[in-house]
Amino acid sequence: MRNIGVLASGSIAGRKRAALLLAGALVGALLTLSCLPGGSRTGQEGDSATSSPAPVLEIAAIPARAQPTPLLAPALEVGRDFLKALAEGRYSASWDLLAAASRQKWVDAEKYSAFLSRKFGPLKMALQAESPAPRQGWRDPETGMRYETAAFLSVRGAIGDRLGEALSLPPLVVVQEEGQWRVAGEGPAARRGPVFPLAQGETQSLAVPILVYHHVASTWPGDSGQRSITVLTGAFEQELAYLQGAGYRSVTLAELANALLYELPLPAKPVVIAFDDGYGDMFTDAFPTLQKYGFVGSFALPTGLIGGAGYLTWEQVKAMSDAGMEFVSHSVNHVGLHLVPEEQAISELRDSRAELEKHLQAPVQILVYPYGEPFANGSPEQQRAVIDLLRREGYALAVTNPLPGTPPVIAQRGDLPYQLQRINVSPGMSIDRFARRLQGTDVR
Image 1 (cartoon, rainbow, N blue to C red):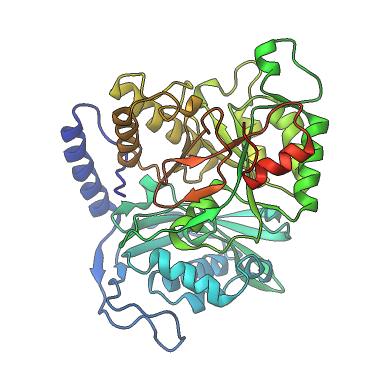
Image 2 (image 1 turned 135 degrees about the vertical axis):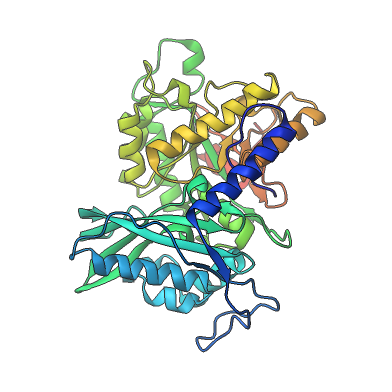
């Protein structure tokens, strides 16, 4: 899979040339890279070895930004040590810098190191942590652990052929734990971190149901069309209670992407709980119910509608994101990408992603197709054209809807990352039918 950053307007060939020139100019401005001697990745720590390890790139000069306060200087040092260990393939050393609760979400050091080796081992890396910002009373949305003192460190640099600033790398979060600074948010190495092209194209398939809701509301809407896509809050709570009792654990689409591509360890019974269109009841009804049962949701936003009547506001989106909810692209104007001119389709993909990354300061590489198109009614040629646009615009994963009258699909294929399948949750659905749909045995 080939990722391209933000492109200039004009022909596709022209945009490619412009992208390469822009990337070269930015790399020259940000980084002076020199290859260190190669050799075995095994080292003294016993990390996984590769037959031809990629050279590590050294950041020789990055313009200095604001100096940290004396209190946060040790936090910055720990963050830089973590990124240096990551870039050099010393994953055991980076494990030693993790906070205790953060280690638990990885199960053990062996699984952590194996995942990072598959993800970053073939790639050249040059990363820098800087600009620590203090945060008091921060609660880690992944572990639920609350830390009295935390520092958010911005991360920039390059991974493979991608510029960190173009890719919107997530920050490192360094916390004080028993008098020492430890990494609680792993930045590019996080479970929800950005994904990159695979050197050998090896993927896996996983049984992960992706449930999709639209409205979750305490009362039926007056409009019959909206009513047909509304699940009452009480029914939604019963469905979450069933998931919890049956041993399901929610994961995000970003975690699913990392599992399909790099074998990120997932819970024994993973499920994605997804929501389309960014309606306001996602904040008033769905969000607090998810929190009550300890689940995370994945929300697909048409960014051009956010802030409008009946939709989420950006303040609500930010609050939900800070609490651990995931947000992905649903285009700007909720249009079928195969039905509009190519330039508009590019704008829908590029602008929605840029708007989400601006507000959330996190990478967005996932699209939920509006109306499930072009996989509902589009031709094979239209499907290939849209997938090609997604690749060029830096999207790594896309999710569509099942065809009417077909059984729900729970098997997600890593070799078809732009055709992941979801399961519609209908209003008035019994718990027995809900359970069958989770197993892929109920026909729509």
